[in-house]
Image: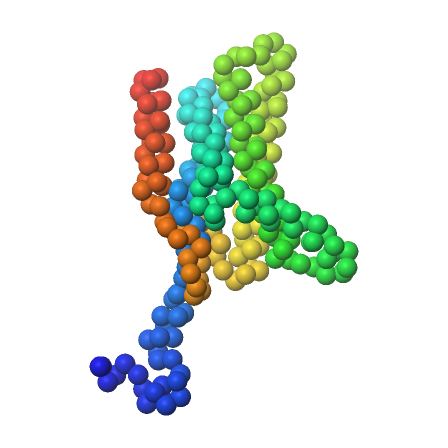
Length: 233
């Protein structure tokens, strides 16, 4: 045994050594698997790219391709939320949303449940983004396929733009709630969506990272982009 691994005080008092304290401070547990994180960031990239390229003909195919990708990712996320690992299920968000009544009752009683309220609003924003992603893409496809003509086309374009702006509002609300949650919990919630981990000791909520599945999703998206590019080249 290394004689420097513990001080006499540690031995007699049972206090943790400096190394043990450092290890405890750096402990973390996995709460999100790789596929969930990959799809989250791909959806964010697709929305930002589609929103930026919404006006003008020069980047029309980029806009269309990103829209198709977005709705495909939404579909995948719904399937993953129904059949994937427990921590990634849509039921988790629905459960948080059901807490709205408790939050309302607490506010009526003169209490301000900030963390519970943030959970409810975040769940509403996330589920709203999934629905908005489908609607904005559906109206965009109808425009691209020229399914409406004359004044109906103008009306559909207005609806598509309205939905796009509504989705932007939901994205901004989502970001604001992530910031609020980070402050309330003193924990960087955006970093969790990158690493999949949160500080603290305990068992991993996401038992498997499923990195190969996340890699396959990324490869599928990139392959689709390459195919789209070649089809219009």
